[in-house]
Image 1 (spheres, rainbow, N blue to C red):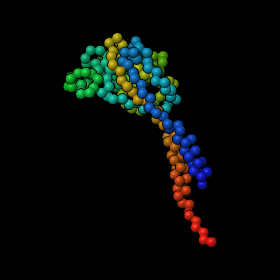
Image 2: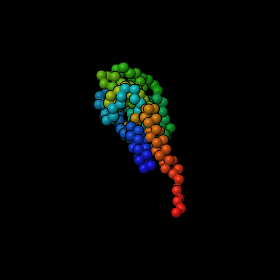
Image 3: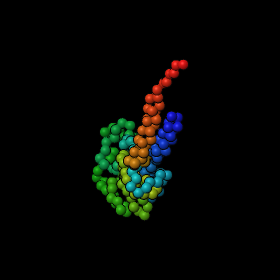
Image 4: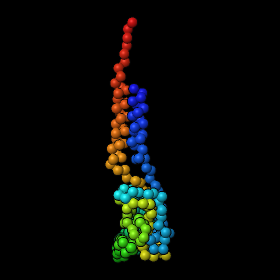
Length: 197
């Protein structure tokens, strides 16, 4: 019986090990990591083509592309009013973002100024954002602030990035846990034998 439990635990460890991905914290600076005049931030993560990853950040974590009203979260500059606790430093209710800036085009991408993008190299970008699950184009993940002039940019946003396990990985993990459960259940069912002489 001990061998069955040991085998179950070993199988569960082997099957569930690919899931053990912890979040990576990456800080993207609007000036230093701009697509125009900066260097993209290398996250240290590499994904296969088609692999999914999750990005999360606070939408009160802001960066700016210049004088008011140019504050944005990683979804780009849109109409926005300051709220208590955001990074603008403005009184609540002050207009800090405006939709009048429209989109900026660089390389293959046309997107809002101040958006978070993945730099794929050769002036090719993938639009990301403040929060969501995205599909990798493959290779190292490098992040950047999307804009035309880094000279008047300020602020930074902190992102948490995690790989999203594929369905096959979840299935293997469930099999491993099932084997543990089976081993423990079999152990409980052992009858106590009493013999009388």
